Image (cartoon, rainbow, N blue to C red):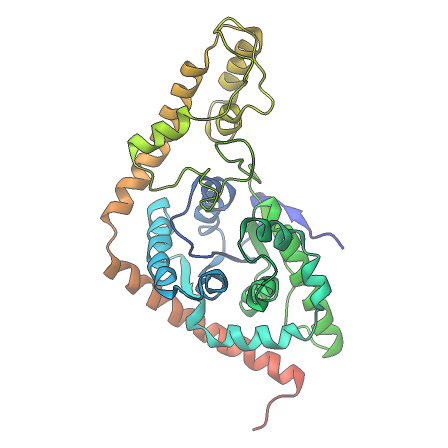
Length: 342
């Protein structure tokens, strides 16, 4: 069964939204255009939870937990810098909600290893990791852990990139099996909320933007590094002279302009000019650089003003609120399973 895919306009005040990120470092423009922009808009429409998935991050960094802890702070700084308001969105740390671990264990009994191995999102991630033949069970169980995150807070709408939709399919499969076996409606199915840009290509044009691949523009990118990355972008190798006609399809600069340029009519004119000849790559990249600078400068400025003490206060307050919800949901789950002994 294919997961329901809708856009942000379908979200109502009755929805519960949950999103999250693995703290593997600062977030990048792919995160921003794929989900962060929607999160800022959604927090004014309905109840929102935002999870910092440090337990999942440990599956690839179990021998360097100090890096995960540091990255939790960095990711939360990005959240606050882009406009996520802790008074509207509950931001919490995964490892501080032990109920999530317990629900994950129960859910692991409801899905096969073969089904997890077939998950295309997991397959894609494995290609970027260095597990070789030593895939950890923790990594393989990411979809189950994410199912626990979603259902613990009875989330109905999940802003994701297109590549994450298979994870939501797994979550809904487990929910249906749980509710069927235990004759319950405690756990809820969810739908994916896609942004206008469901997948941002890397600046090399070869893969999805990713920090681990070194082909992403970070939200905390310094001005000189931003300029260097933009001017290194892949365009059209046959567009040698300004007067030469150029290809828009597969041109990374135009891919980014599609995602971030606000005047779509003006952008269409630029595309037509480029295809006919008369618009050079340097001029085009300068336009994109100015566009991205305009977006990233206020984020970078806000981020610099956020201190670790403030971040920790936000995380502790949000985690305390989330823990109360998780405690009640787990009670309902165990009651449905007949695991209440008092």
